[in-house]
Image 1 (cartoon, rainbow, N blue to C red):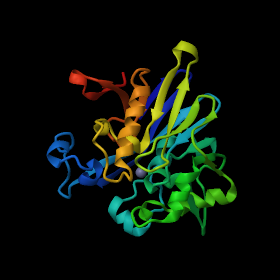
Image 2: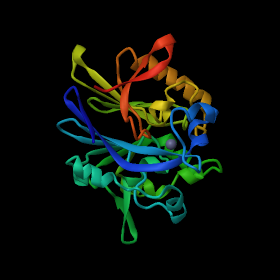
Image 3: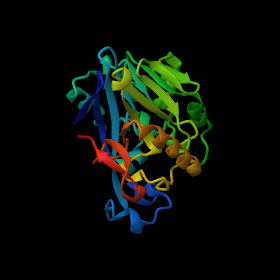
Image 4: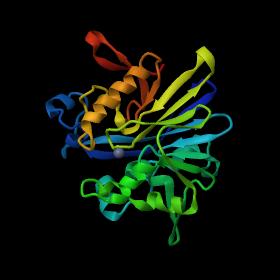
Length: 283
Ligand SMILES: [Zn+2]
């Protein structure tokens, strides 16, 4: 389990397990001859991807960013993705019970980011984290409701609509501070309204920052500006959003957390030889 401190906060990577994604879809227009030097695909051209959530303990509140795939995938998708469903076990190992989560933040509503928002209990679907308030961008939810041909499969309303009905999920309109040191910022590209979560603690010059950048930079292999996933709805905006992010994060040395990297869940993005972007591991 990966754990570090950030100012007065404690950050723990809690995983829902791993799943397999098509290598071509994962790396978009990047030729296989290039990406396969970084990671070897299996005989079906698939790569093993992580499902990293981030637990932030501020001392007063427990915040869970992202909730993985969960345990209620339809049968067809269980065949494709299996259903690792390890998040609650890993949270338990990290010393936190579902009742102790105060805030859940979903960066967007694709099924592999909000699956554990809810669980089936009898014939009902209820909140996995009964005492939490859940946050997502309003326009992201509206997009999911459209059920467009391109991405309807990614948006499964049982992951969020039951929470809207009970008032547990709050829809946000743009960038916002949710509590001191925890704020969300929209970075368009993967979807139009995907939000990253910026975490800061320490105060004054000793302030330390981290960012759960979600699918804007899904793994440490996607740091290069043009290494954009084929899943992204707006690839040109992904590139612009990454430039913006790097301009903020690199000078201040933000710790970047990668959702889908099962080997390197976090690190510092920096310029290496000949200006090439790379990652410095957390030490
Ligand atoms: Zn996504």
